[in-house]
Length: 241
Image (cartoon, rainbow, N blue to C red; front, side, top):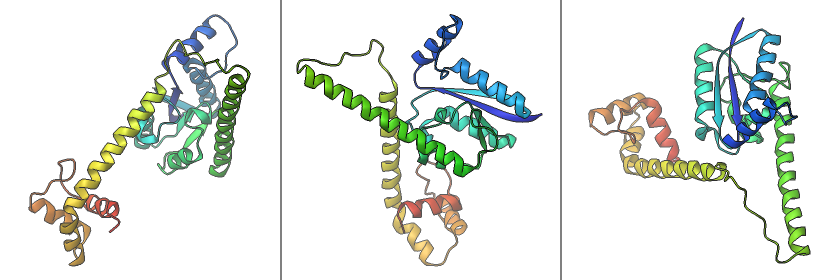
């Protein structure tokens, strides 16, 4: 049996609870909850000869970038160590955006989608992601049109608030704000070290030599660590030097 990692995602904890409750009561449901995703992945794994080593569960908006999807990053890291694929029930459990799927492929960890099958190549997955992205935009457009029609029919009508607040929007904003803050800090640090790095580079030093010089001078990296060739390269790239 081949090892594999399972990844489950719902957009809110409420969605997961409602889906599980619907299943326990024998009602029909959409299949986006954790229990249904897990069952679909397990059926796929058994059919294709995989053994699920672990499941990683995430409650997060699909709009979040990969850097903000901690459990998905953990799943990818473990899959890479095991040289195993990541299994998901549906492509939209990863994302409904083509760029996200493309970025995921760049991680060099294979992933298989249970309801698509093993034979889908990267081009096909991009096509599926493009359809999912279009569907999400169409749903948003229909929702806006419906709200506009209600306001036209009744100028005093106001949309009601959901009883349970969805945390995905604030989570999305918080993650992007954190990423922006980190980027600003990195930019500021790069500017401080720019002159020194450029002088070393222009004198013909290799990236490894520059890293060694920075360490000998006692200059820490932006995170307070040691310099390596890759650190120098990334800092120079940030400066577009």
